[in-house]
Length: 195
Image (tube, rainbow, N blue to C red; front, side, top):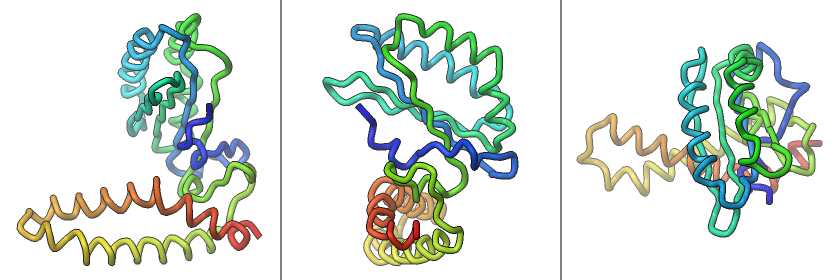
């Protein structure tokens, strides 16, 4: 089963370069039946080692829903060079070798750089909207979200410290854009974005 998150983390192997900025790598694996505990232990181990590599910006794990066995692990690096150093490392190779018998089927890897992951569509895996169109859409979406958050959420938080209010506003905006708004906006505007 394809995890829906991968819709936004399409692979752009030809577009990734040292100048591309932050890199997000999403890895989907199907865990062998009854081996979930071993895989969870494997995730803890590889994550601890990955965090020691230069430029590592964090790891997220999306666990399967009930009845499924698909895990998605998301690694973020501050540059292509640092992501490549991790991918080429002996440490990572040893951890991958230790997956024998823990996972079923092929591993699916997706890479995205910059803001492209908000604008990718599964039916157009190699297409990239122009930077001008992406910027125009983001200005409208971000402005609208900031306005709505200010009008409907911030009045309830006016007694909170400024930093905490700002954190809540940013958190709401990023989560809404990533999981709710941008997938729908991209689908709605795909004929214009990818013309």
